[in-house]
Image (cartoon, rainbow, N blue to C red; front, top):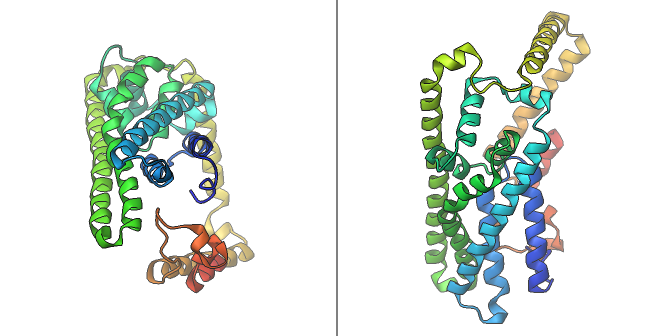
Length: 310
């Protein structure tokens, strides 16, 4: 936010949009809720010179975040389609498993499907859309099922805007920050709830088609034989590796390194959990306000010690 704040508002929005798309598409597990919150915060802060009301900022922020989500979904589907014939990826994701076949069935079912909606609304954002692209699901159907995401985007965007309001109105800061925290929890609870409901639907599909799954022909992947051969090769290599990596067969120098590494990893864990490796830095903080204007000043002594042990 600090880097794009000096830019004109339209250019700043474009820069934020592009950076968010890169993060959502190329970093699996990227937190979409945090991006929606950051969008709300940025819009509220930058539109103050334009005399926008808070409600207008939120309407614009929700629409902006929804477009960001839709474009990211399409790009994630394109990425999934690009890797749809990768035998290595299918082997890594167990494309022949019952869970993967149930997901393929749900994503390719025609018409409105509550299970498909719950899958697409559950977090993290990357994997459902990547899977939809990998099984060549209809982009229009996927986007249609994604529309209800607005009710999850809304509290996240409002939370970001309230954080900025709280940082500017110190008298009512606790009210703003408390409300923002509640809205964050509401959005997160919705994501978790959709994930749990999708898990139920997936299990029901597996139970319904259990006999067909056992036979092996249901939702059969065209590259299933290639995937199985690759998995058999990896199993053979795994057994060979297990033989040569047994502790008695490990060289003495490697045993020492492993012991030192385990001690260092334990030290990092204790320093991080019991110490204070970082100073407080929140969504409404500014890098320019830090000592020296550098983000490195957030690290305390225990933080640098933990980094050293790494």
